Image (cartoon, rainbow, N blue to C red):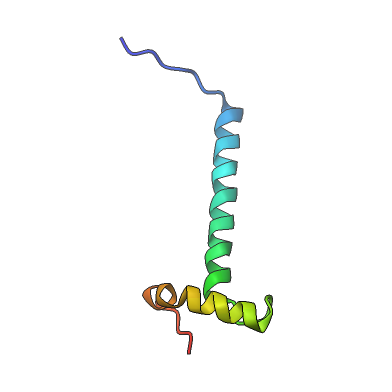
Length: 65
C-alpha cells in the first residue's frame, strides 16, 4: 500500500502562488530581453544586450531591425 503525505490547502495555495510569481518574473525577463532598445539601459548596454540575444530574438519572431 502506498503511503501518501496529506497536503493542506494553505501549502497548495502557497505553492501555486510561488509558481505564478516565478512565471510572471520569467515572462517579464523575456519581455525585457526582446524589447529593450535603450529605454531602460544605457545605449551601450542595450546594444550589448541586443547583440547577445540577437539570434534568440529572431528565433522568437521578434523583429529587431
